[in-house]
Image (cartoon, rainbow, N blue to C red):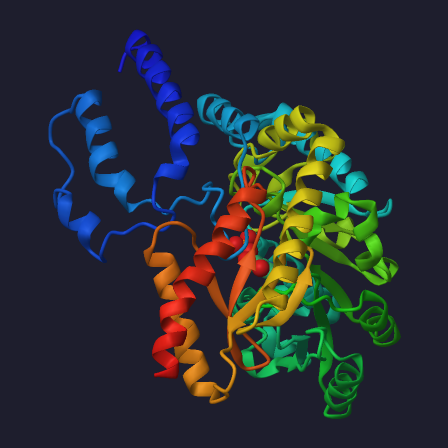
Length: 477
Ligand code: PLP
């Protein structure tokens, strides 16, 4: 493509992008393709000769778009949101064009310094105290892994990095049984070993029980292990539970354990002063992660990791290679030393565009709207005979199930709700995912897409009632 052709196609694509967003509601939320269908339609090897852009774009529309699940659809209530926004998309276009590799200050002074500034704006917006310094990571999974590695080195006096695990004491890790699966994955990758991960039971509100955490820590110490890190969750994935940072933090402080907070989803809601209750106990926290790519209108991927002891953190990752040295030396921040990646994308740009385009107040209005919508619809479902709330609305998430009167066999209820979920998703009109709340199968209702309004939530509730009708009749027959 020469520059003139690039310009023409770029205009064409922008039109397609605006049309896509304008008409997204006409598309089925979840892709309807069968496994293998997309791959089967594509040639088995790359073309030998250059192809026309027009042909590539035609195949994008015909072969790729049907295989998209439309995350930006306002009736997307599955998983957690991965909401984007026009300013974020525009910034992503610029990011791709200037194609920075933000590994060293010198390889992109703008990417480095904008990241420093924007992450401090964000820190203030979510009410994290002074003393936390931020860095962008690709995902919460990676950020938690980085925190675990730092905690591992602190607990082992850097022995693991220097000599390997055999030289270190046995190190243990704690989180609630409700914690995200990434915690267990990170435990395995960081080398702690799955058998050294303690999953602590939660209470009726899905919060980690500090009494059980205390007993587990004491038992491990008595057995000669060294507790390295506790991962507390603000906003658990299945049911929206919140661990008490104060109760967990006091234990961590008593035993010198690193406290990492996974607020991947709920962290964005901290821009609302009325939701800052979840930060009670933040003084005990060593590291804190949340995902602007979930609920802060910033395209995936963009994770904010905040660390208190940055010297110790950077020590774990810093590598001195002759070809990476620059004349600025220690006078600048080199983000290559702040995590696992060497090369890094220029992610701060989209965050900057979003924060400036909406302003704090604009973002607050959107998240407040989501929280209010979820609370309202959860209330309606709770009042509807034949339905039951398994996890009450916390922020913008709740879990419900169909529970016809007289049908109390748990296995049959599970099956009925699985059928309901599949029928809802097959309709193409909305998309939900499932969770187990205290062992019971339920449907998660997670509100948070940028364009989701009252009518989308009301229509989803009408769809649920309509779809449930025949299933209830069948169950009663
Ligand atoms: N932690 C929690 C609580 C989550 O809900 C999720 C994803 O939904 C993650 C971590 C993982 O996020 P990521 O995809 O950024 O690794």
